[in-house]
Image (cartoon, rainbow, N blue to C red):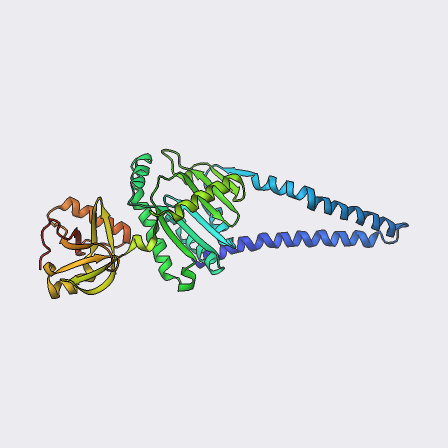
Length: 356
């Protein structure tokens, strides 16, 4: 990881060094020409005339030409056949202020690019860059729709794999740096892909049957009309009431209750399958052993939400059990074959009691 980060930074440093060398050579050439012409008759007068003309041109350029060229530069776009992951990683590593990503899931976290991408994020975060990543909610209907468009690609699983790696990265950061990395999942039909670094971005759309990062990419300034439109869409999704933070997706705060008394509050892993919620019962085993399931209930959201009874996942329904375990494995990356998995049933709902 460190080697990948060093490579990205070395590329940036070499580019800056070349610019400095060319500037120094041009400056030295100008000085040499001035010295060589010092003995020519009328040298001083010519210098003053040329200097005055140069100052007038500088003023005209500053007032008239620069705004025109700057406007043309900002509205100019460059097209690429596909997303160049290596170049994008270098841009992220060299970012100075902000990095924004809007995707269903990002190929930067697939095996071939993950180490370099995480290294680039680490370099950017260490520099104080604010990073925001917005992925499609893998539990949304839009994720299933996108899977159909991509010929039954396992879109929810790919998104959960992204979130798992980002969650792990977030947990390894010190608290101050962790606040710079924010990840959320949105619940809306995906329409735009955005990879932004500072004032530039790669932008694409979601064609049917093709992954966005395999489609044609537009490289544009964020101050261009296209950039402003995409930035506005990003902010809308980021602030939408249905958008969830990564920690809300990865963990569920539950309060164990004995009759009407609260015993303890803890964070547990969970998955959703249709309308059903399933939790990893490992953190509840002591309470289940001490008090039995019939007297216990769970309140979600730290005791502020609805109250549920706990029902053991039916071991005889092999198909459903396998599906739930596969969701846990995809979301958290470890085997849950021997995990005590509990289904949450709204208090008063039907369902067999968990065995004592």
